Amino acid sequence: MTQLFAQLHVTKDAFSHFGELIRGAIALHPPTFQTLQNQPNSLLAAIAVVFVAGLAQSLSQIVVLFVNQVRPLRFVLSLCISAIFFVLGYCFWALSIWTILYISFAGYLPFTAVVRTLGFSYAPLMLGVLVIMPYFGSAIFVILSIWTLLAVVVGIASITTLTLWQAFECAAIGWIVIQLLQKTVGQPIASLGQWITNWVAGEDLITNRTRLAEELYEGLRAQGTREPMRIESIEESVRSASMNPRK
Amino acid sequence: MRNRLIKLSAVILLAVGAIVLLSPMNERWLNWYLAFNSKLLKVVIDLARVSLIALLIAGLLSPFEALGWWAGWYGDGIETHIPCKFPDQLNAPASGDSSAKQPGSQRVSPKRYVVYLDGISQSCADYPARVQNFLDTLAAALPADMVFIQDIMAYSALNRPLTIQRPFARVWRLINRVENWNPKSPLDIFINLRNTFQVAVSTDNRYGPVFNRGTAQVILNSLRQRGYQPGVPVTLLGYSGGAQVALGAVTYLKYALDVPIEVISLAGVVSGNNGVSEIDRLYHLRGDRDLLAKVGAVMFPKRWPLATWSHWNLARLVGRVRFISLGPVSHNGPTGPIDPVSQLPNGLTHLNQTLGIVVDILTSARSTSNAAKA
Image (cartoon, rainbow over all chains, first blue to last red; front, side, top):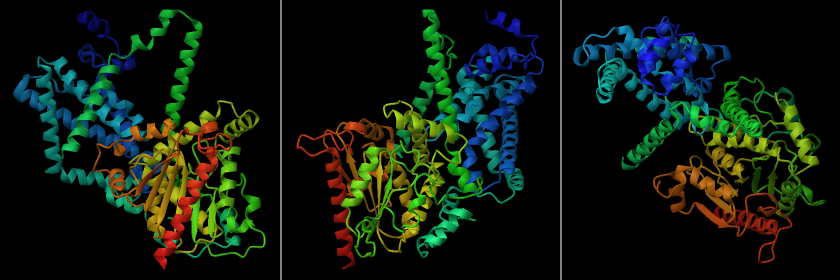
């Protein structure tokens, strides 16, 4: 049955049944990851999945942009830049996993196979737009992250001879390596990334949670001790309607 | 550390459960109704799906009003004026001020400001008859030195009614017209859902600070319009979701005014996430038949007795949260806490009981603050 499924899809362009592949990846369906490998444009499709996932993922950070009062056009550009960085991060993780697979577990495996598989494993994160949902968004984010990890594990296991646990170890070690690199030799790259993000946003973005919260208190104390409004000034303010506390 | 581990385990279990439930891509269980071969059932299911999608989109868009306000995307900033009802009252400096309603009485300097934040059925400053009756009766019962403010749009950081200056203003106006014509119409559920999402925004750790800052600004503006003098204590009276909005705003109001702030939660659905640590006292008035208030206590983990470290439970321990039972009273409507007809076993109407408790709280708070000053 699995072979039949693979044969059916082997000559199809990945974009022509993109939705089907996404559903298969979200359903953690191993044959989907196997059929991907021989399909035309599947590499591009995998990167497209990661970009969309990155875009959805960046929506979870929109509060930072709003609190920093980024203007609408720069806001959209910032989301795109964030998605591009997300794709870069995915490339590094793919490289890390491929290296570990090559060194310790499965022997030689084409790098593009890992890139394709890992890319489509990000499919659950395409639902990341749901993270915007108030109150439930944070829980949805956790669910999608765990779902993606499971997809990565199933994907790696289905294109190699590894068991699920070995695939998990491989993904986990790859992730730890990336984290270590980010904190050490990756610092200049991270700084460059931050500089680009600030440049696109048009200001030095405040990302620290405490400082973001402090921003919201700006100008409040002065308002509390201000003289009461006169009636004429009420009507004036109704006309001018320029009461944004930070303007 | 142990508590964090328990929380993390619970979230992971929930996540794995959801994945197991959803991962076979639902084809079979989403299309179960096809087995019945009924067109009517198909239409009903399709309608339900469309409604769910619309609900989802409404939920996704809900944080943007407050966030866009803070970012200055709407240009105008906060509305300090509600044309729905307010313009003819602009000439009266203290509309809603109980002292201003007594002809011939001399104006006294306010000793307390009371701000009313309505429940989730609010769409403009024209309150439903039952609520308006409650507000009028309360305004008349308040001492002359209290200023009663009752024109705040609790679910908008822009203080903007649903019925004007919005893309769907016509829809909300239509719903209001239908509601006026037939109060039993189920259309008000759309207003309730819209405002429920704003309550969710207020409780959210990410958006809550911005939304609550916005409502605090609206309250501050309103206080200033009514001649607020620094140092005068404030009481926020929140009905249903209005109680959460009140608690959310407390943190910022306390910082801005530096005065004692109390909250009276009337059938309130409050998260216990924010504001509780800043508050001087929260009076939580709840009916025994109030299912929504009970759901609120279950829905928000910070209110679970297990969460001993939460601000809510710590405030309860030191007596800053006081629970007051309203007896066999439900959340709203003819059996709700502000109904003037329904009677309790002791012969009091629901409205009179609630009024009595609220006025008692306000007057005892006044005497306490007077004693503190002396």
